[in-house]
Length: 238
Ligand SMILES: [Zn+2]
Image (cartoon, rainbow, N blue to C red; front, side, top):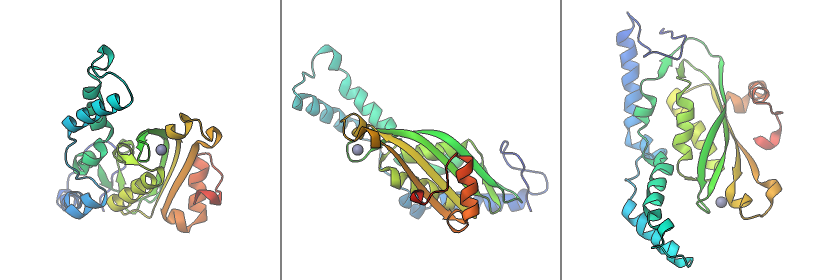
């Protein structure tokens, strides 16, 4: 059995090359497969920046602004560039993201990464919602480099989203890549569409969770995770 204790390095060791490469190619095949890319909406075409520029000029005129005034002259271009970046999650190459950072191990401890900042856009208003993600899994023989988990969160944040779907996509992606005993994802978000428009300001913070495998089935596993992220193991999160 291949053993990798640390999260750094390329995961290769003398004498284990053949078995490891075999496993690695299975992973690459999965990450490249059309079904996988479609399931996680990773194969959308490039952003049409010309159309966004034209549409932005339209919006400026529609709200009574003058797109030719100095401060707005380059706004359509800036908006197009911003959307290209803010919606880049649809065009992320999962193989480049993972980049061989999945390692085989012989332990099954819980791995927790908490307080990962995220910035997303709600699909109802195209306004930001921002917050923190807390991600955990119990290994079933594979671990992923810790720095990859915030990048996976980014991949699903940089889209038009609802917080519930983003939570589940992060969990399902880790489940598909690591095939672990369980995955848990909790997201805390504040939604600008609620805050800026001045409705229900005190209810604007939202918590969503996705629990798979051992986190769903075993209350102790779930409680251990909830304790680590400073929550009581209350049912309204499930
Ligand atoms: Zn909204």
